[in-house]
Image 1 (spheres, rainbow, N blue to C red):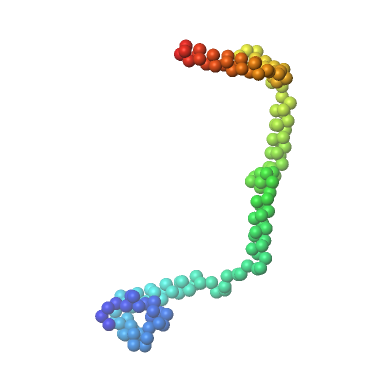
Image 2 (tube, rainbow, N blue to C red):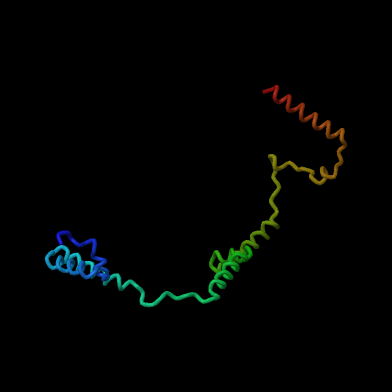
Length: 158
């Protein structure tokens, strides 16, 4: 055999060569140092790879495993906003933070801001009185005319 046998190493190691090819392979390996070295390295590699193959089959999940996973997912999806908030942070922090938020909201609702003395914030709007007023159709038309006249005047001035 004149050609090197690198392409037949796997077939030789697995015992897939016929008797004639195996005899020619053995004769070539005896006379060729590079093929002998390649055969030795291939055997060592196979020994290392054999250690990676598990001796036992992988465990098969029980019949209710997938049902339990689905129930767990459904439970996480159906949680309310507080449970989602509590799940997102450390359990010991959820209740104190909620208490702090409620305390802040209560303080904000009861806080009386001082009345501004000047500027637009100082203008008092009689919202309740204005809402109780009843406008006639003539009042609405007059106000629409006034708005249009002011817009026309503003556009002429500019």
